[in-house]
Length: 279
Image 1 (spheres, rainbow, N blue to C red):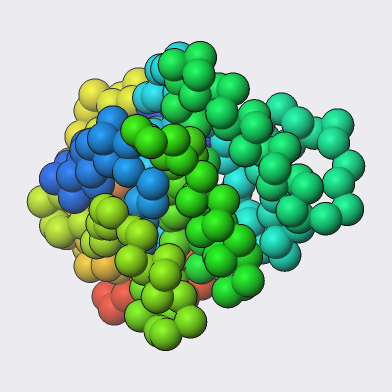
Image 2: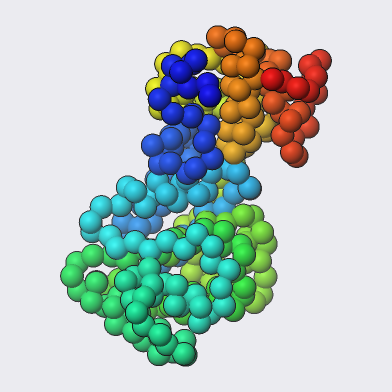
């Protein structure tokens, strides 16, 4: 509703993980660089962790979008699967969907044969798994076994895990020590500080087609405080604040719209002098 009012081509605070909205501030850019260095170096396992809403999925999509034709990529957005189902999902992502195997050993052999073929063609295979903290210990172990396949020179499969911090806690345990020892690189995403929050909002507005600083300084300060610097919450509150400003016919978003938007958002506590009913 507010696109024409604010001169935008699209909604700036959509929750869809669009790589064009990837904000290259210090933390996320460092994580992206770690991923590129690890994959270019041929490392087998890489891990990116962060709290809910810190941008793991967007980082994953940005990585997949950035990899060129030298890479064959596979992506599992929800790997809550037992070992055999996990292998089937990996096979499907690699273009082997027609295979119907009843045992994980036979399916793994077929996957390895395919990985060898791809490697011989001069390309690398990268498997990205989002929400990896939801995987069972058995599935994580099955993934480790699949990552073991290699030539004398390089790994046949590189695996990137995107997960909430609960995965770190599990990896610290005795049961997953073999997987823990195979993690070559890791990075922990953190919330944005106030300066990065301001840059994040400005970047998303520009990407959506608006060069005008729509949020007042007081609004940005309150937005950072209410969101805690979590990108997903910034998006939710920012979208509602724009709706509030539009509903009032305002040209900019003020502190009051941010407070009201935050109060209308589940799980957000934000003090202030303004009430509900921001429209």
